[in-house]
Image (cartoon, rainbow, N blue to C red; front, top):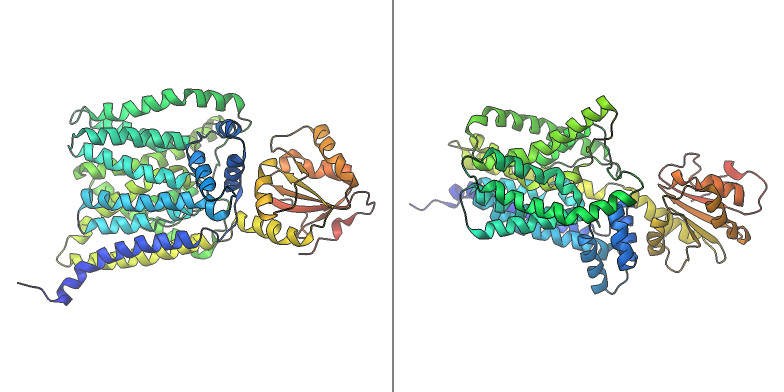
Length: 510
């Protein structure tokens, strides 16, 4: 008997929301590729691809990264004419995100089936962290693309599909992930743990997982040794322990999570609070159904929760022992858990939706999630960031202030390429490396600037060099940009060599 359109309507809402979430996610990302300026990590990306090939590889190893993503990015910039721009720098991330979205649809439909797959697609497509990273010149959207492929191959093997192609794909995607970022170890070890737990039911799983991990470790040994011998500081961006609640909410519900380079704001804080409450409700569902979890639920639960647990445990161990063992960092470090979290959450909602009014409940849940997460994705792309301020200070303020003959000093040197991007045609006279600590050497670099009528210093997370204080001794007192005596992370300082009065009470106007 044919149903009327009013009877069929509830069945159409969830797939429509999934399609809308996918299209909205792509639209938001591509429309925001040039919205904010480059923040410090993106600036380091630009600096890396601006170096000669050999120096780029060595510089990336010093920072703890293999150069796969940077080789792809460099090729993209070259294909676009060779001149970096915000659009070209961020385009590979947006394309990787489009690929991840396309790959997630068959993953969700295969292991969840209709209609729950549509909820998972909404959760994945509008995940605030994923959307934020898709609009940045960083490697994490590429990691997310590989993570979708890795999860699909693994779940296929767990479900009993023993075809060779899944082993090959798991091997390839695992290796590609490790070659993109070392933070892959924070998530991918869970596959080994899950395979070990299933060794009696499926003994071949552990060898499928172990092979690419061993291959990755063996091929990474030269890079690890180079990094260990050349690194000059730790590269983990630690976060407060309370941020782990935000991580949990992000990976289970898709709401945006905090980071230290953008202003979170009250609206996003409310969304995150909603996500935390929902995340704990989902954990309750998981705990109550722990004895009857499907293979897919078991694997995705471990992939979602164990990396967060490890972050918390290493933080507690560091607090207790004083040893630097914590790996607790921002949510982007665990971005590979997002596909598993979306699958897990959609599957946990199954008992709630499997009722006589299931289609209506599913449709309502899909609409609500789409609206909430779309708002979160929009807000997380619109918030002011360090990059917003950097572009305003350099590309707007300095562009109006610098005159022919003025000197330009950049601290650290790794920011120089971004200064040139926003100040085309203005040469950088002195670039002081972020690891330079010798006052005498810095003073020698600054002395030629004594002949300039005005010297401008762009200081972006370079206070540790002591350059502002040394420049004050060499060039004289400086004006405080913004009329603020706090150097902070980003400042533009104005020196007038030979000046004898103290102008620190006369801030430079904007």
